Amino acid sequence: MIKFENITATYTDKVGIFNLSFHIPQGELVFLMGPTGAGKSTVLKTIYRDIPIADGILYINGEDVGKIRRRHIPRFRRKIGMVFQDYRLIPDRTVFENIALPLQIEGISKKNIKDKVREIMEKVGLDHRVNNYPAQLSGGEKQRVSIARALVKNPLVILADEPTGNLDPNVSDEILDLLEIATDSGAAVLMSTHNFPLVQPRKKRFIELNEGRLVTQ
Amino acid sequence: MITKLLFLLSESFRALFRAKLPAAISSITIGIALVIFSLAYFTYVNLLGYSYKFKSKYRIEVFFQSDLNADKARDLFNTILISDGIEQGEFINKEKAAELFKSYFHEDINEIIGENPLPMGGRYDIAVDYRNSTQMRSMVLDIRRLEGVDVASFPQGVISRVDSIVENILGVSMAMGIAIFIIAVILVSNTIRLIIHARQEAIETMHLLGATNSFIRFPFVVEGIIQGILGAGFSLLILYLLRSLQSYLLEPLVNLPLVEPANLIAYNIIFGLILALIGSYRGISKYLP
Image (cartoon, rainbow over all chains, first blue to last red; front, side, top):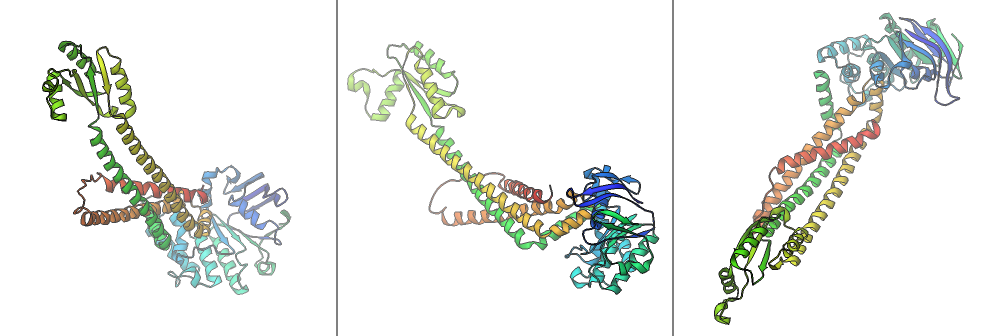
């Protein structure tokens, strides 16, 4: 599902990820660990083609990411669900509208959007927040909206960049539960975090990075 | 596709509603620019009308040598008549010349000096394209070269002055128009930039969710179109008020027949849209190359 083969991707000559290889199969949740500046976000950005690949081959669902043309990047990104530490919700849209946005970008019919969004909102426990705006939600609820927005298009890959970074331990656990549920539908989930005590009890595989290089996997 | 289009259209109206004040400023800016354009156009059309009327009186007068007999004078008149730039002409024989003398000086030339020494000649009206000092001067020089022509002339001083006044007014109007156009485009694009800047984070998120640049750009373009139409509406309203004011206040005092340019509504809408679209495009291109 996600396959790194000797990937090097750098912002400058010294900062980035170097010669990284790992594989995350379908339906697996993997944690990307490491201190700040280890290259966790760079790995995720490389996957969604926010930074170019300098060397190596990266496959997502069998597609060579490095060969995707610039104008096809938006279409490629629609196959990936993304969750961010700062939620990245659009403040002047309701919870429903925020979750519906990826479907509207894809041009799905209004009726289908309504059904899908209702279904996912129920799944993440937000069905009572349909018409609320992000400012009216708690941090945990915002992150649920962000996860619902990532899940609503049934992506095969979900990338979560420190999704629990701003949340207290109980809420963080709930968020991890939701990401685990996402693997049930076959998605490969890669979550970056530096909170080892949070992910340790989950008994999941983790990839550890330091200074852009693989430490353990 | 239709779902996407409807969504984008609703987004455009939402975006306009969200940024009411900048959008209003932008529409009013377009409106003011269009009012000035329309007034300049109105002045131009009327000036052109008056200048056309005035120029239709431009004439070249030719006096033939006095020893020319009537047949040769008629031939010479016809030669000049078929040359480039002559619209029509009137042959002046000796009798006609005497009549003209009488109409100008209220005296009979035959009675004053006992004979008619006035030369034959012709009066020529000028074709529309040749009604300017340079062309007429060149025509007169050509006529003077013809055998049998004694004098050929036109009121060069007056014509040069009229030409230069019309040219100056048109030049100033053009320069003003260009300046207003540039100012309006800058103001509209800056307004769009402000709106985009305020939504930069949302735009970034949409990019990450797989939105294309055209998907993000579309609502801003539609917003620009709406601003253009609102600006045109504002301009037409002001023009209507100015027209009413003019007919209420000035018409009873000054009898100045004015021509109202045709298609002013269409021109306002078209120019409003052009202004808004160039402004939007300029505003968007900084953030969405």
